[in-house]
Length: 409
Image (tube, rainbow, N blue to C red; front, side):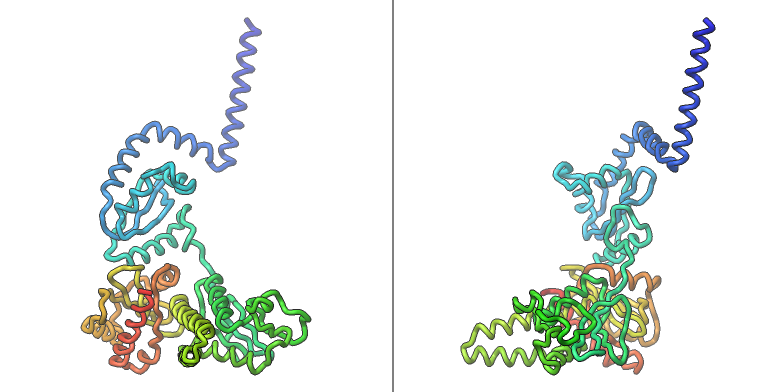
């Protein structure tokens, strides 16, 4: 009998020790196991009720533009999305579940609740989505959550063969010229690629090229994709002429386009259609480059800009007035052949009189830069400094037509 009691005491003691060890382990892992156990019991107790409530909320989603916020069992926001029709978009997550990607399946399994934020337009939904992602930093949102450094395209004149390279800071001075600021390195590299297709500029993105430092040209020279300045295969005068054309083109000059059009017509008159086709392709690439420069230019400091912004294929657009990188005023108009004169005059008058209508302008400007949409930047610094209201109105009217052509193309 005493042996049995002693055995019971020993087993109870070992159970107590193991329980304490488990408790210490739970403490050391920051309540990880406790959360799992709590989640399991929560599913047993309120799982069916939560799923019924979630189903009702999904079915009750509005047929309007806005943002949807998915929450987990701890009421934390795990995903933020936007749509021009919330009902259609949210229901897609729960339809044909087995055919979806594993990431979507994992997200859907964690959804316990959904919240809707309705907006007037799809543009507002885009901006609100970006703002919410930057604020809450949800686990399943990868885009717009990470703060990226801007990328600058720089041309350095310190040597005879200046290079075109990408930098994370502005380096404009006596020996260097900045071609603008872009959202990230990928956008800047895409523009460098377009330079190469039109002018055969090097793709290696060096700061400068020294003659006779390399004996053999690289692979790109042999396939006609580089002029090999590092080997001296192009004269300094011809190379610098190309660099100056790039700078002039980026500053808004259309001389390159007009010269190419004249050359294309002369080749077509001579029935040399192959050369005419090559120049035609170069013109289309330059037009594409011009639109990309206007869409991704993000150096908004110490200047005044009006930015035309339109969600893809939406029937309305917005004009944002930005001063020194901060959004101060905004107007939303319908897409028509001609811009609404009355509303545009009122918008320009408010800008000149400093009657602003936007709060959280600094956050909004960062959202405008981050979102993917049709954008068109217009520098209006001179009009604001000179209080030239009528000239500003005519300027925005002209650029509206260009913005419309770019967004429809």
